[in-house]
Image (cartoon, rainbow, N blue to C red; front, side, top):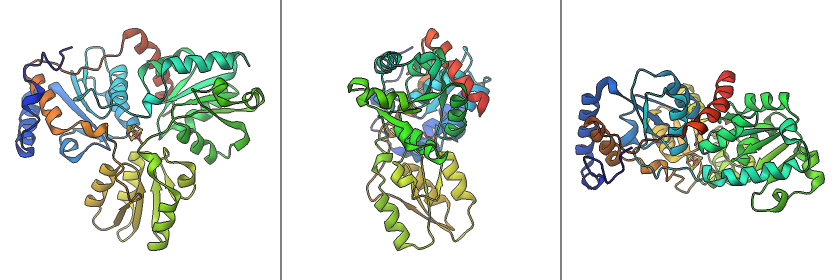
Length: 367
Ligand code: 13P
Ligand code: SF4
């Protein structure tokens, strides 16, 4: 893998270039590369980047596309680090996955480290034969080593669009689920399934036994890791109340990473792709308020001109890490690639890849 310093063209040459020039140069590099490159873009990606994507979607759709499009030797992934890792795990060994800026991480994914999950597993094993009783379920918003942990321990990955079917699968195999790193997604899905609240506990990795009594651990059927998305935690129930009061008849649609107090007040809950499809297919004249990342909502607002589309929070809720993938980094990685220089390759170590793929394949079989 070439580092930034070794690249034929240094990133510093790109950072002060005008937007129009970068646009034209990306188009040119894409033309030069032709069938050598596939550009995948997540729904939160900024406009000046997503415009170049061959295919866009939510995490599940992008994972599927990465697995299916083996004819492209290079995949430029416009999203965040865990998504590019998933693409690398699911793509063929002769394919190269590039993340235009390696600093595009995910604050939620950083809330669970493998050492902490190992510690949690060891702690649980003092109360029960953990590998027989607990299925680990990891949200794809996580590092590859956590997916590998799940592959090794009979567990599975999930995305926001298949979490329900994955949790049903997990409970049909073992009595308990350890769900990480997003407590909200796990809780919201369990709530929707009518799962009793007194059988859910939160595991705080910074406390002994996750901050739980032995009785609570024995009783729990769902152990939720204390983790969240810094973007989605900004949406509050009073924002929903405000819009309902100001715009009677408005429909509220939110992502399941929001707090349950917001989700419980919404009309629709689903993945980024579900949100886009639902609002896009709604009849003209309808009004919507959307609780997810700002780039997605602004695009929806601009495209759905026959509908009223609002952003649920009065604050700017932008995925700051996704935002790091800008036209300059994209142009830089594409022009280097056109010169035969791979920069910012995402390469999951082979041993991790094998086990992580076990967990991802289990999920893919259910989706
Ligand atoms: P989706 O799978 O719904 O695209 O969500 C990804 C994500 O990171 C939401 O914050
Ligand atoms: Fe991670 Fe939240 Fe950004 Fe999604 S929106 S990638 S969960 S930080």
